[in-house]
Length: 251
Image (cartoon, rainbow, N blue to C red; front, top):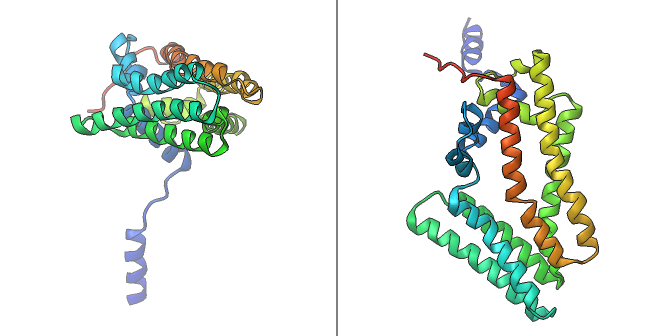
């Protein structure tokens, strides 16, 4: 009897298994909500303020654009020497440090600035180590590869990853997979995001191998925030087409 009681107690304390799709979808939806994407997905109208918030606000846009823009300007105007490369990289990293310090001093959410600082710093360190300005963009290229591969795999296994995020944002879970219209919409939406990363690689990889640092820096800026903003608008249109009204709030 003691053994049976122990078994019962162990059964009662066993943590229930979590479906991997549910865990992934919940995590993606939570990350999207924290990034301001949830307000866009659930909104009946695409408000400029919400779109700006999803892009990080004016400060977030500056943190994403200005370091790269400064690198492009300084590198273009500097002599193509190790010293010129160092000055351009130092200016870019220095601005990222300033943005991070401002976030910390004002006690606003520093995660985006810190992530940007780490990315800029790591890229600059690699470029200084190799002595080639094009290597300032290697990490970004491999990041696009990783995203593209992950999204492609999700499509091949018929679990489009953007659909998972949208499903849990819209309180639909994975029910959309049993609705042919919604499933196709989530496929199209996921393919659209795959297209973003593939397009970046198709344009920027040849520039990297051609050692055209200025063009590489310029296209990274153009295909960064602007394309991301356009894709957010496209995503909202697709989501609204299959979720035409705001989900009812659970009582």
